[in-house]
Figure 1: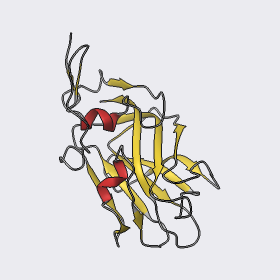
Figure 2: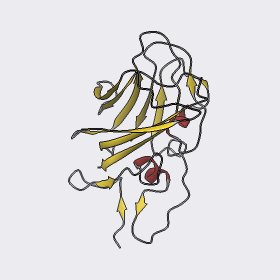
Figure 3: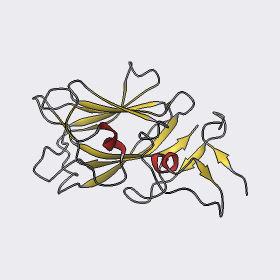
Length: 189
């Protein structure tokens, strides 16, 4: 069986990651957290947060998290992560200089209890330089994230491969950003 390494996949090839359910084992971050190897019958290591191992990086706006570790934003397990209240709060993921993703779906986990500032108004944004951001999907009064550490997923209609992704709160007043997990699906180059 052929072994693929996402770090060396050319822009013409790519690896496909197909969404089935929230935080399944088919996502890009799950793949990166299990050693980036994929072939029939090949065992992978147990999942480790790829931000903890330096495979990807996570950043948050300043001031940083009020509660939790910023790397919890891409966890596959329940993580408590809330920012201090402010306007335009955000958390961003950098896949690294050798990876880009054409996104088909993404998943978010609320980073706390049901009454702790679940996301309602935000944009998923993509970038290739980490400074100029394009809106990939807008959520206004979206109540999908109901309940303690609730999860939800959405399709993305994009043909552009991005290196950076950002969840950007667009609420008019200062709010806490509460993201305790992200996962992405699509074609990784």
